[in-house]
Length: 310
Ligand SMILES: [Zn+2]
Image (spheres, rainbow, N blue to C red):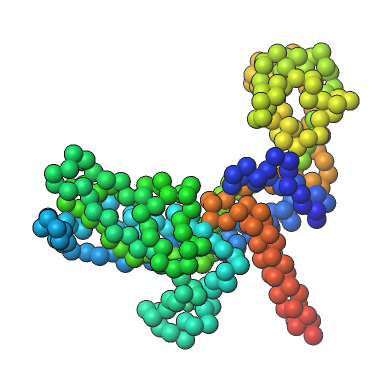
């Protein structure tokens, strides 16, 4: 198996990787490892402050009621991408050396959890603002600064606070795996498809497609110039062509005129693998961690088999 990043990727958190010399079952194992096995951080426990607060300066009363139930806020917090640093040596709560012998309630230490606090009040009663939006950026990280919520995620809204309302809590982020809960899933839209090469078989009839004036993702015209010696092998371009071909395919009324002027030929044993991370981990890191997970699993399996046959 040989893997290489497709030209032009990663785009933000999106990734495309060409995997060669393999078969669908191996690529699917990788896909499942990315979805279910790659560990990442997510908020998994929240302790809300309930009650009534009096503003010290003004004597105004704020109550811990707000538009969303606590469970929904906890769920929204779980979905916020928490920067995951595979090299920081965070432990899973169940495997943490400091906490392994403690009871469930006492578990949790700097080795296995990251703490965030939030304390926000709605607008005061003489304010013109009818409400205030609480955002991910309002979370204060009280652990290592490497776990600060990243700039691009700070605008994620959590809830609204009206006048006289406050929201206060401590949130604990822990390392987990997607197989236990989707909040720990490192990437979404994990898919793969066979690698194709496009062949221009009938240049004249292909004008049915070329005349539609379609563009590739990077803004080039879809026309004969994409082909060299009637072949197009560039992966991103072939994917754009594949999409464009739907405009002249069955059911479009153009398929008879087009007459399969461009065909896609499968490259044996090669797949284009795509996914998008939620921003907790870099796209490259997700792929490498998935390979590590698979490696360790098959090592374990190897050892088990040796024992089974001994
Ligand atoms: Zn611990």
